[in-house]
Length: 317
Image (tube, rainbow, N blue to C red; front, top):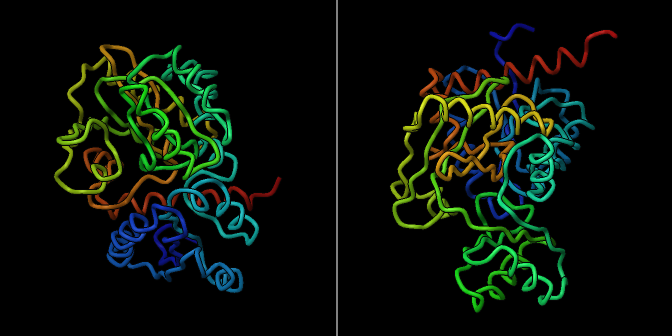
């Protein structure tokens, strides 16, 4: 099969996570790109269509995932696709699971020599007094967030002790594990990786919220995204190296996007996204565009990486 052939693609979006609507919105953009590229696609919602896809898997050249959060980005869906021998873009089971758990990914970042905010993971039903005791070590303000959610869902910035319990309860209603960590005030940046190469750096400047939260991420006009970011050449290279190191530390492939905070000239890694957003306000497509990739060219590139993976896996030992 040539990479210039018309492909038959199973487009997966929706799912059951709190990021379902963002997923469906991104899928609409991908649909338009696939149509312009001349590929054939069928839409499958993992919330209800996986049995149908199992029966028809052999009809498709590959899957294209535009799905976020638990059940889609955590290795579960990737394991299912591996089991029906349908290749897909992005991280495999291991990489997806490692990146989805912010506590585990922080450990791997540190082992790879990257700086991360000081913090700790707590399991549900941990006595609140233990969390309060830990907080004394890192001081206010601090961040409380679910350990395995994306798009800043359930995240709170806690400025005073009396706000802590509400933030902890909020995070625990969403996840079985939470992370309590120091709040770093600095420049919010993100760096995409495409085919093992860093893309131009994006700086995110929220106009209303203190952080790049869910509403700010997905509401046009609430944040300014500057690409390429106005960083020194030295700092630009360093944050790109950090993103590539994070990508490799988490055993990722094809593409990813790593979020960081720059405090003065120190870089702290926050998290890595294995299926970056594909809406009109999404950051990886913006960086790719600055690097010379139209949205359609980006989608085609990801399809080609998927097919290369398939050919590699079929190669004789």
